[in-house]
Length: 145
Image (cartoon, rainbow, N blue to C red; front, side):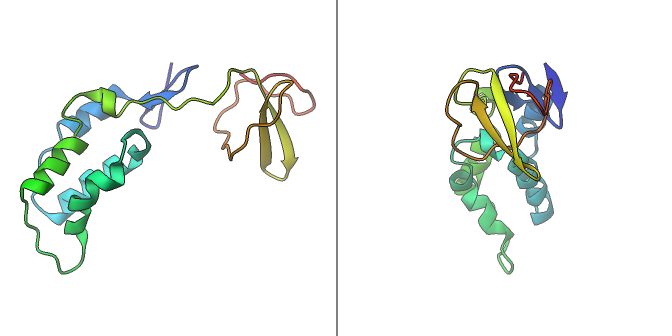
């Protein structure tokens, strides 16, 4: 298990660090636009772990528009509580997984472009950003951990 930029990464996938979940859950209710921007900015970093993030945060984002008076009402409070993960970290710690079991082969196509595929299988469709390789030999067809 590796902690990196607010995430815990293991061989299965990645999830949000518990300390970051505590920060989100203990964040006080924003009383002005500046504090609301801080809250939404922190959550935006983890938005891929929050189902329907843009839909839930819409009432709060509306307060950020120019000329809108900062008025906190029931709808904003409900959105704030949902985004604070009031029901616990399970909502925000969904794991991101690759679609197939490894080992994987990464082929350099051209420049900084790579193709990811499972060994002896067709390539996986989609765009993958390679953040970290534990073992990689540019000239071989070895699996990547």
